[in-house]
Image 1 (cartoon, rainbow, N blue to C red):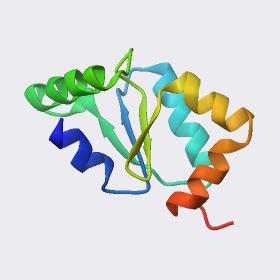
Image 2 (spheres, rainbow, N blue to C red):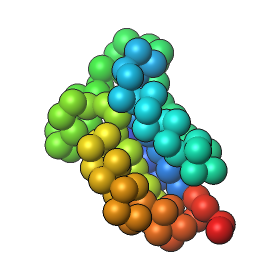
Image 3 (tube, rainbow, N blue to C red):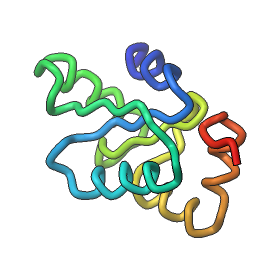
Length: 104
């Protein structure tokens, strides 16, 4: 759990992902299109122990499925459904500005 918290605090936006996950790809693309350059942890590309350990920690946080898991400003925001809802209702951009991920 500590490793996830430390990783999540490394940058304004951190995404835990798997390279083969289509929803992960969609969420990463959403952030890139907003002009955000997130820190991305591809759990399936990490050594097997660390990737599985981080995935278990994300599940304990309430991420189900474990990826994509999005952190903004070091705080767990949610998975794909939550992030898309925030984007559609306009809250995501405000959160990104407050975290220092967007300047406009």
